[in-house]
Image 1 (cartoon, rainbow, N blue to C red):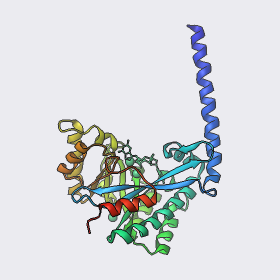
Image 2: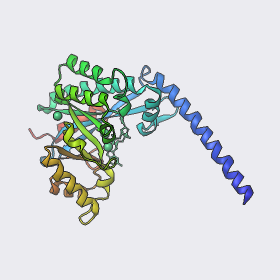
Image 3: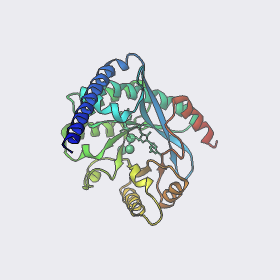
Image 4: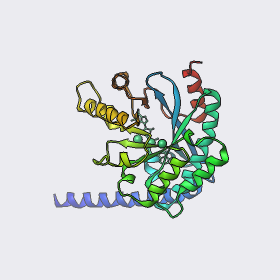
Length: 280
Ligand code: C2E
Ligand code: CA
Ligand code: CA
Ligand code: CA
């Protein structure tokens, strides 16, 4: 047993060592990835549940590493946050999203919105990315409400002046705000009356356990009723089955996003998807 323990210990440290080495490699490679055009932005359509139409999508970054292949944002975004490369990467995603707004709006012939994820660290620097983003919007000629910024609720509870000011600037520019992964973070909801929030995104963990008599049903319904009373629209994430879709629709959920409708797809495929679903 004693030997076994030592074996485990050695194995464990080796894994940790490998993890640290891998992380350092990714951190280093991330610095060059942008220049070397290794990133792509995919777009996941967001469906209006009452009409079935699509006039929103979420921008999700993809990294095609030349040797390691596809690397999930869930593994490299945290490294980009720690090393500061998230700022450049985020600005690039934002510029791609603006171009995509123009392309989608041209074919959908109505206002098209693209949402972009913004990590807490992207707010918490001296001159936050919001200046750059506001400049990009102004230069592009699109409207502020063509863009939705997705943030997590954790960022709103500390009353950080940099966050508050960024959100006020967004409001002045008509940029909309969505609370991502809603329901997984904090129990206090007081931030909802303090900040101008446009959308709540119900986290996938609720959607995926949804059935008629589940506690998730009660939670989703309560979130939708509360949001609507506050003038906030609701997007359900991670919709994978027709049953989930129908239940959410019956509850009055405004929008749905998930594999049932479409996986995140390259820009050209989003255009095809919009063409196929629009009823003109
Ligand atoms: P998120 O913002 O919560 O994005 C939703 C994630 O759920 C995406 O994973 C999406 O592909 C996945 N998804 C969508 N529909 C379904 C479904 O029906 N079932 C399941 N199981 N999953 C679904 P992805 O693209 O791997 O992104 C992971 C996370 O990485 C995102 O979570 C977001 O927090 C972060 N991220 C992605 N792109 C960016 C970016 O440009 N900037 C920043 N700061 N973060 C990003
Ligand atoms: Ca998101
Ligand atoms: Ca607003
Ligand atoms: Ca989410």
